[in-house]
Image (tube, rainbow, N blue to C red; front, side, top):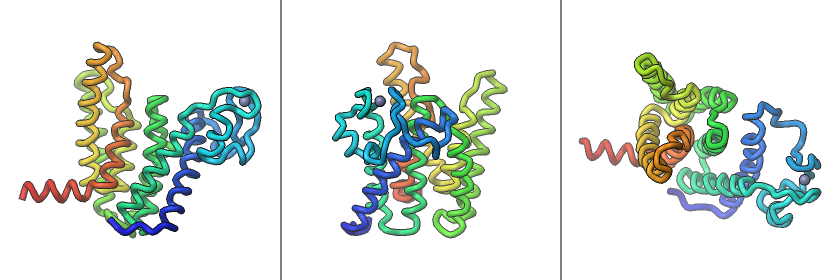
Length: 258
Ligand SMILES: [Zn+2]
């Protein structure tokens, strides 16, 4: 952990809020196959176009009391929440990575994970428009930065390929779809950005979290709701943990083995 610098911290915080605000647009429009750039934001209730002053992260929501300026329709708490969470995740990454080139890569990765988490939660969908460019981005960044291109390449194969094989085998055996194609591509992206060790760790963490929370949900609802939380949401959380603390966890684990 590096010593935080106040100016850098402020920049990262505002960047997180602004990108969180952009992610709101992505999360709303991408699954509906709408353009992300145009038209500008509109109130879903009355269709009033939103000005820049309606779009200031957190502030507009607070000033307008969580309602549209025109029709007073309630605006979902999800919007300021996404902005807050993105800013929080950005600050956390800054505190771990410091003001480094790797920070830029991991912030873009973290923003993608926030978007995938929210879209999978609501639509049970992990759009190719995020995961496929994510694989390309991870491989290109790894030419210059950790984990390095070899690790990233193996990571993509481990994340994407191995899981695809397991899913395929499971499907042949049981005739039931195990993992969706979206999960596989998302794991390919995680492998490309974090490398093969951390994509394995991500799989492990997400399976543990998935089982624990899955059992809790099933117990709570007495069955039913088996797919209440799609696997991509666990993958996103696990990938963020792996991005932040994966190296330490892997080193600690290797030390215990050795
Ligand atoms: Zn309105």
